[in-house]
Image (cartoon, rainbow, N blue to C red):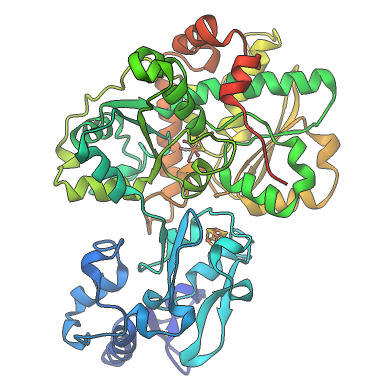
Length: 528
Ligand code: HC0
Ligand code: SF4
C-alpha cells in the first residue's frame, strides 16, 4: 500500500523499507500507483473477514482507514473469507495469556516479524513462511504462540496495522463486572499510562492526563481509583533493601530488577541459570493488588474483606501486554483480577461515550494507596527504576544527602546499555530493550562489573510498552519520557522513602523492609 515510484527504479518500491538517498526523485501519488494500490486492496479485501463491527481494533485499523479514505468499500466482497474457511494456520490463536493472533486478518506487511526479529526485540518468535500468495507470518515450527519462547512484550501488537495481533482483551469482562455492581471494585493506574492515553483522544503527545484519567475511571464505575506509583515506592523500599543485603552478603550479585514481566519471561525461558539474580520483590502492579486484597486496604474495608472471606475486584491499567501474563503467574496469589492496556482503557472510555478531552483535570487518587513520590513516576521510563533505587539506596546507606537526585547517565530512550557509578553502592547498568540485555549477558564481564542491572524489555521502558497507543510519531518515546521526568521534577517528594503512606504501612503492619511480613505479601518466586 505504501508503494512509491523512484526515478530510475524499474518498479514501484515500498516506502516503509526503502532508504531514501540524496538526489532521489520520489513520486508518492500517480495513476499507476493508484492502480497498484487498488489491485493490492482488492486482493487483501477478498481474503479479509468482514467483521469490523466486532473487531478489537475497530476504529484503529489502518486497512479500515484506507478503505474509507479511498472509498474502496465496493471492492470488499459481501461474504469474504472468514477464519473458519481458511487453512489451519489461519485459525485464531488464543494460547498466550497476553497476545491473541488471528491470521485471517493478516495483510502480510511483515512488521511483526521485523519488530520481533533482529531489528528491535531480537526474539525471532515470528518469521515468514512460504512465498507469493501463500506467504504468511509463522511462529517457530508453527507452534501456537503460548508454546513458543514469546516473552509477551506485545511489540508486535503495537506495529500490527490491523487486528491480526492484539492484546488478549480483558475490557469486556471488566465492563460486565462493573455493570453488575456486585463487587467492591478497585483500579490502579501505571505511571506510563497517564502520559500516553492523551494520544488516543487527539491531545498532544506527551500531555499528562492524570486528573482526566482518574475522572474517566470514576465515570466508568470504579469504586476506588488508586495509583500504581504508591506500590512503586514500596517496591523501591523492598528492592533497595534487598540490593543492600546482597551487597553486604556478597551473594547473587548483580541484582536484576524484576518488575518487567517480559524480562522475567525471557530469563525463565532462555537463561534459568540467572534466576537467582532476579530480585524476589514483586512488581508494583502485583504489590498493589496484594495490599488491596489482603493488606491494609482490605482491613480498612472491614467485615468480610478484613477477615479474608471476601476480596475486592482489582483491575490494573498498564502500558504493557506482559502484565496480563504476570497477573496469572503462579506465586502471585491472584493479586490482580484483570489487566487493561492503555489502548483497551481508551476503547472502554469511547464505548461509554465519555468525552475524555473535555473531562476536568482535577481528579485525585483515593487514599491511602494513592500517595506517591517523583521516584515512582520515573519507573515508567527506561532507567527510572534504577534511578529511584539509587535515590533510596544511597539514603539507606547513610550516604551524603547532597548526592544528586537526577542521574542523567541512566536516562534516555535510545536502545542500548547505560551505566553509572554510585558512591557507596557501586556501578549499576540499565538495559534499554531486551536485545540490549541479551547482548550484555553474552559475555561474562557483567558478573564483576555491576552490582545491579535494570532490564526493561521494551525500548524506552514502559512508556514504549506493547499496550501503549499506536503512534506514527518518530519522537513519541522522547515526548512521553519528557513528561514523565517533568512530573518527577514537580513532585513535592522525590524519593520513595519519603512517601508517608509507605512509612505508615511499615510502622503499622510490615515492620521493616524485607521483614517476614513483607516477604509474605510483597515477594515472589520464579520457575525454572
Ligand atoms: Fe511499568 Fe511498573 S513501571 S512495570 O513499566 O516496576 O507496565 O508504567 O506500572 O508494575 O510502577 C508497566 C509502567 C508499571 C509495575 C510500576 C514497575
Ligand atoms: Fe515477539 Fe514480543 Fe510479539 Fe512475542 S509479544 S511475538 S516476543 S514481539
